[in-house]
Amino acid sequence: MRLDDTNDMRRDILDWSDPVVGDCLFEAYDSCFGGNIDWSRPMTRQHARVWRHIIGGDKKRAAEARRDLLRLALACRMGPEALDAIDRLVLDELVDVVAVRFRGSSSDSRSYGRLLIEASATLVETRLASAA
Image (cartoon, rainbow, N blue to C red; front, side, top):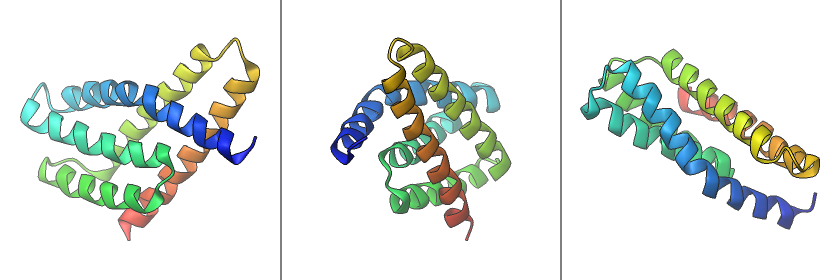
């Protein structure tokens, strides 16, 4: 896969994943906070920023956004383990979407899968960088 192909695929995944990530995050936070919009909306927005940077491959901005998310989570009495569990939900949802959306093209499915593996590695790096 050429670099320009990867960049095109990254732009594409950023386009279609944004509403998927947002819906998944809102559902998780709405459930965590029992429908309290005053907490679920800002948490959803900030966590979506983290994911945009992760998918976009911007590790520095992802770590900064994750630190902001951790501060906001503490104000909502939520620990980092809960954020990690929500991250797993988001990643699972993205993998499911790739599996269904690109099932007709093993090449595209494999390429998007690789980008999600890269995003997963970036997520781990982001967690470590924001904890320091």
